[in-house]
Image (cartoon, rainbow, N blue to C red; front, top):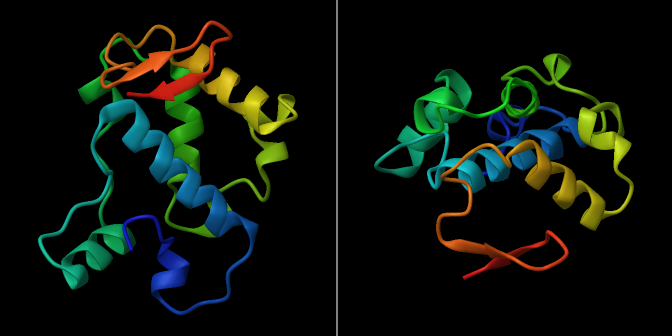
Length: 130
């Protein structure tokens, strides 16, 4: 439920932009260790996803790059029309494979000191969960 897009929760038609939203939730959680939307019960979480804005990344990671803020913020836009249509249209689209996308995210987050909390980087720059 925490990774569903607002349009999914409203029962509207979905496309690849719903996946972009879910990816934004994953990035936010990966970077901060917290979900961007909160609720003590399912309907409260659903309300938060549809109506609330997440706390700014820089509140959790003061030295986060402006490019990473843009990527995550754009992915978490409430309206699908305000999100990129595909991952290829995002700055991460310059990367090709899933590994290259992960490396791009790690590179963008490299100045975020708390990024690797609870995780390790392997010798190739990949993320290994601890």
